[in-house]
Image (cartoon, rainbow, N blue to C red; front, side, top):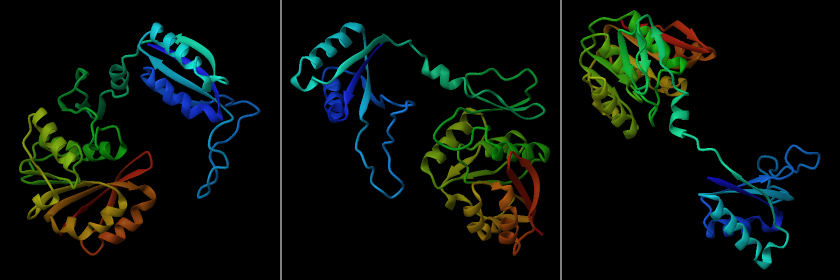
Length: 294
């Protein structure tokens, strides 16, 4: 891969960009050529106001080509045009090959939840001490084990593990909480979400982890459950208070996450007509709240 860098005045940026693509550029990016200098010129205006200028005074355009001959030919063709009088070549340099897949995967390491319980991407081997493992790769649906709210829910499941006869994971995302409950002995698990991509992800992730659950839209949830899990956000949790509490069986537990520590008071108030909530865990500014139905 080779990168061709050109310098163009404001009035030629669009033309140069289009011309580069027409002569075979794989991509073109535009940057302020005077960035970080004393003559740098802000392009954007204040919120709600139009920018006073439409382009930087001078822009550097970086175009990627498959090889050096293609980049050289493109520069020659472009500079031969009458419109290119004020356009100049700044550099022609090889770009190192990068394994973007491997680089992205390196950001996601195994996540410890509790002694022996780990969330492990499929490209990693489980740690030696792992006795329970959720195999999960980052995807479109929320829930990889790296966010504090997910970790707290999984920690709670591990600490209170029992053969729950029914579990509802409301707003299941990737299905990670439902899978965690299944690995700790739960049965009759319903994982529901308003996002069809999340429903599909939960079903696929459950199959990949060898656990059984039903994934579907929220209408799938029916009756009462000894355990109801909901890792969403404070505002929808407030609105869902009567619905979620209506699904908790007598003596059952409701576990809520996605709540900032400063929001715990309003959640207590919202759920007070049905059950008392208490903060049972904290992690990096987030709180886990739990309540038991009478």
